[in-house]
Image (cartoon, rainbow, N blue to C red):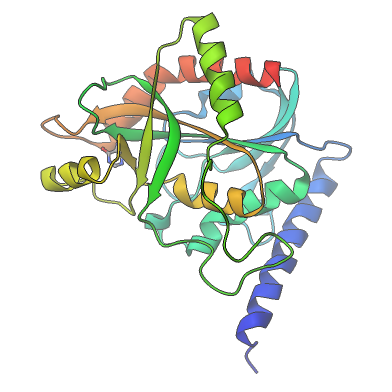
Length: 278
Ligand code: HPA
């Protein structure tokens, strides 16, 4: 006998709780205050974490396992900027074949573990003509063109059927980032991130389209996780590292990783500075 449709979603909540319980058992006494999701080539922030526990995705019940090169699969628990954090080293992308619900499963679990804020980074292509490779763009809005992870019966225990997406990116955290960047001498851009499914990079006309609809940067992640986080009421902060430009002749995953590595020191300083001030 199959489960009914609503049973399936009750089942999802049970899975989230089960994964969170498993992790809580592996991280005794450690309640994270903030969650951090690290994007392509941006795993180096982990070197700054005073690691207390680490849990492989593969060990966590119902956790997806990352497939893409450059993404390690584990949750890291420790201190960063004087705060207790949980960092996802490696994230899940829709283009890997996961359902939208699987993509956001870890965000649900981190919320269940107690996080009060979510920090996200990604590598993205710049479509704003004033952007340069290596720029850090604070995300102040997004346009989601990836299937919405909230489609399906709503899990009322987690959040409302129709979540507000105004101020999806916390104005307070954006202000804090601006202050920290000024102090640290980090140049910031600000703009709208457009989330597409990938895995193809954009055609020239698709880059034009992204610009025309109001985007400043484009990538293949982030919007699903932010949607799930906002569904649960979590304040969010996101940074895109501009690893290539719409105007470039070509783009490759290797180039994205290489440029991500170059800019990640600044991104790490920004995140750490922000955590210190919270
Ligand atoms: N397009 C989509 N995703 C990306 C890009 C891009 O140009 N760069 C890094 N991720």
